[in-house]
Length: 112
Image (cartoon, rainbow, N blue to C red; front, side, top):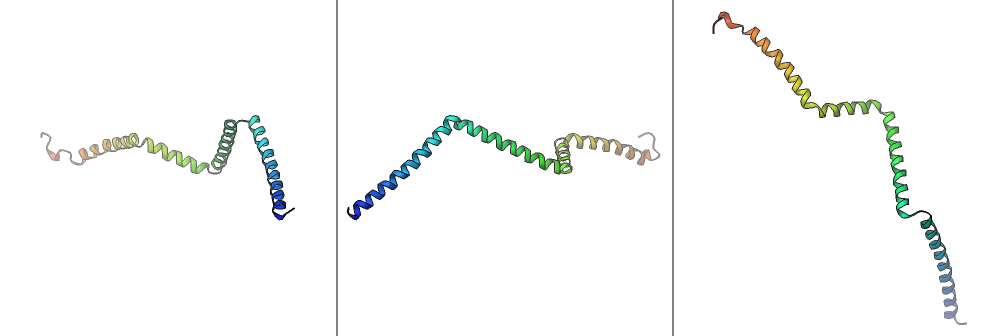
């Protein structure tokens, strides 16, 4: 047997072993896909990640109740800023005319 023939036999043996490993892996993938489809796997992964994110958020929320309460109060004030400001303006404008009338009370002239 020549060197080229020996090398060819080794290469074929290596190729056949690699093909055997590939076929085994392919069979495993096919069996896994028959057990659970790709859309089902994606849904399971998304569900798991959402649950983990919610759990992490709840952990942070339980540690930072004051910060969350302050943030919510600021958001509520922000959304209702126009009615609050209008009410404050109304309260202050009602009080000011009374003072103006008292301060400039007719200057001794009752008939204008």
